Length: 356
Image (cartoon, rainbow, N blue to C red; front, side, top):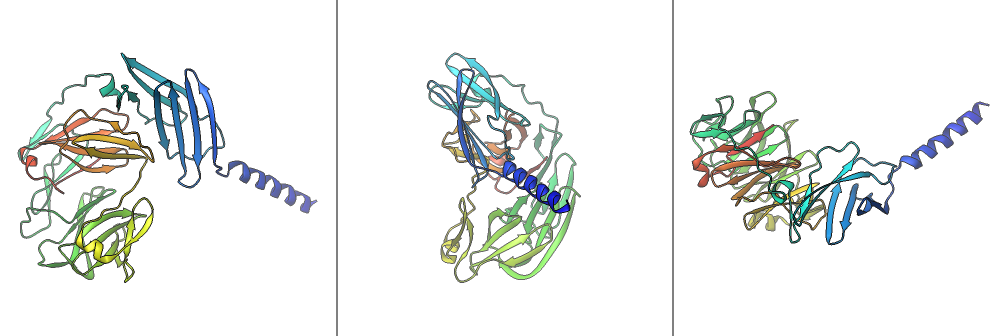
C-alpha cells in the first residue's frame, strides 16, 4: 500500500512538473479588431507579442513569469486621434505597460501621439543655484569634494582636495562607488555612498589601480573596472566590499548581448562598456530620445525635446539632460522636469545622480 502511494505521488509530481515547466510555443488569435501573435522563448525567457491591424503593427516583448496559460492578452485598449492609433494590451497582473502610438510613419508615446498637455512644472525649492522641481527623490550632485543631497541640503564630503571632474564614479542599486582622487597616479581605496543609510564608507584594497581606469558596467551582481595602463580588469562586489582580478592573458570579461571575452590591448586603447538588451532600452538618435523593447527593431519616440545627453537608465526609467534641465521618463508615465542648473550646459558628466 505504501509503495502504491509513493508511486501515485511520483506520477502526480511528474505531471505537475511537466505542466508548469516552461515550454516554447507560438499561437495566433483574434482579439476584437486586432490579430495577436503570442510566442514564448525559453532561451531568453521572454514573451513576444505582436499586435496587428491593417497597416498598424505593435510589439511588446516582456520578461514575464512563465505561465502555463495561453492567450495572455485579455483586452486591447485603444485611443485614436486623426490618423494616430494608440493601443495598450491588458495582461493580468501587469500594470506598468504604456500605450504605443503609430502615426503612419513613426512610433511615439501616447503623450506625443495624442498631443496630451501636461501640467507646467513648478519650482519647489532651490539650493546652490540649482532649481528643484521634485521633492520625492534624492538628488546627489558632485560638489568637488563629495556630493550634496539637494533636498536634504546636506553635504557628504570625503575628499581633502578639490576634484572638479568625477570620472571614476558608478551608480549601482542604491550605491555610488567613487575612486580616491586625493591619491596621485594610482589609488587603492574607493568611497561608497549608501543612499539607504545616507552614509559614506571607505573600501581599501591591496591593488594599485591607475587613474586612467574606467567602469565597463555591471553584470551578475559585479561591477567591472578596467585599468588601461596596467591592462588589468577587476570585478567588484560593492555590497560585500570585495575586489578581485577578473582578467588573464587570454583577455577580460565583456558583455555584448552575451558573455564574451575581449583582448586586453583592445580594452586599453579604447573605452568599452557593456551592451545589454534589457526589457526597455533607451538611446539617442540625432538628439531624439528613443525606446525599444527587448529584441525589437521598433523605435518609440518618448520626447519631443532636443535631448543633449542620456545620463543613465535604471530599469524602466531614464534620466536625461535637455541643455540645463534634468528630465526623467518612466515607462507608463509622462516625462518630468526634475532639476535646472545653468552650469550643466557646459559640464555634467558623472555629476548628477538620482535615487527614488
